[in-house]
Structure formats: C-alpha cells, structure tokens
Length: 355
Image (tube, rainbow, N blue to C red; front, side, top):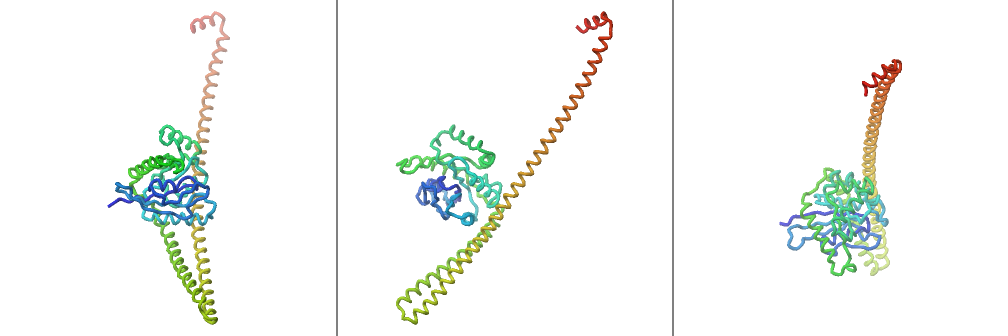
C-alpha cells in the first residue's frame, strides 16, 4: 500500500504557489496566473502518485496571502477550510516566496506558529524560494539565503526555524518550451518531500481548532444543501407557472416568493455564521499576537535590566580601580616628597640604588 504525504502550500499572490503544486504533481491541475491577482479563490486539492514511486501526494493549494479581492473575513474562512482539510495531520508546509519577505508573509507565518499550529511548525515547514535562475549553483543559493537572513530579525527567525530553504525556478512553457527546468525542480522538490518529510505533524491545538471549524463547515454544507433543494423547487415552480392557468400561476408565484424568502433567510444566516467564526478567529489571532508582543516586551525589559546591571557593576569596578590608583598615587607622591626632603647626597644614594 502506497504511503500518503499531505502537503499544504502557502504564499503570497503571484509568488508561484500554484505553479509549485503543478511542478510537484507534474500536472496542470492547479490554476496558475502570471498576473498580480490570484487565480486561487478557494482551496484546491489533488492526489498524485508519481510513476514508479510508492508515495501518494495529497497536495492542498490555499488562497494567496494578500489577495485584495477577498475580505479579511473571507481569507480567514478559506484558511479555516485549509486547516479542516488537514485534520488528520500533514507532512510538510511549503511556504512559497519569490524573494524578499513582505510584512504580510511574516504575519502569516506568525499566525501559523500561534493560531493554527504550534511553535514547532517550523520543523515541518520548507521555504520554497521561486524565480531564482541560478538555483543550480550552491554558492548563489547560499548567498541568497544569507541576504534574506540579513533583511531583518523576523525573516531571520523564519529561515532559521524552518526545515529547509529550497531554491527553484519554475519557468513557463513560453520561457522553456521543453520544460527542462521544471523537470529539474520537480526532482529537487520530490526528493525533499520523499526523504525529509515522512513524519506526520499533528499539533496539540489542531483538534480543538478543527472541531470548531468542522462544526462550522458541517453547518455550511447542510445549509448549502437546503439552499440547493430550494433553488430546484423554485426552478420547477417557475416551469409549472409558465404552462398553468391564471389561478394556478398565482399559487405558484406565492410558492416562489416563499422559496425566495427562505433562500434569502438562509443566506443571511450563513453570512452571520461566517462573520461570527471569522471574528472568533480574528480575536484569537489578535490575542496570540498580543501575547507574543508582551512576551517580547518582557524579554526586552529583562535584557535592559541585565544591561543596566552590567553597567552598574562596571561602574563600581571603575570606581574601585580609580580609588586604587589614587591610593597608589598618594603613596608615590609621599615617597617623592620624602626624597625631596633628603640631602642631595642621600638622594643621589637612593637614585643610584634605584638605578
């Protein structure tokens, strides 16, 4: 029986997230876009078994971080769907970036480590650096990694905490008609997933998160089914009304109004539920971020306290040193005075003795 590996892709819109999914699966299953707007408005899933391999890859492509066409509420709900899709655990998160980390990406990774998962998610996260033409050269990849780390401490923390940083260049068919570069990158990515990502990750807070999200998704599915049934009944009623007499047509129109009212009520109810869970998740995110900020504040205060203590101690040592020098100076001055008070021949004697 083939082993299953669950891979979750995250990244900013336009960084090549869906393209990376296609490269790994060697398909065009996931919608790609060369434009700034994301093609991925919902999570995309697919299972693929490479020929001659004993591993089945379950790939989950999420919506793009920073997609301006979606509200914050919609983004949270889409991420909730992605979290629900990995309720049985995952093997690796591929955090796709095309170079310089944006504030949105840093915040997204912070949310991964605090809200959706735990601090140890870095051990199960691989940063995929796309659009890197010299990916074959180890020295250029190393230099790029060092440059990314030097950007700021938040980026350095992300790079250091992750499983690995992999450089690729997933060129399009127009750029590379034979797609040789994609084949090379596919081998790099698959080898990493096969040999370095076997362990299943199940964070301790995933069950709690999934339970809340799963209940919400179950409600959404039930409501959607009811709405689909009502729309079908409305359609049938409209067809009957077209061939009915005046009295029957009025009855059908009354029924249609009832169907439409029910549909509107269900849609409003679902919107309220979506807003509620989105607010709960936003509140949880803000709470976690506040805890992190408070924790950083405590560390900074402790460091400041340590620095002040060291400065004080150094000052004490400086004063002790100054006092010692002054005492020694007084001794020397006293000795010089004594020498000055002696007759010249005595001074000459001491001088010769010292010489």
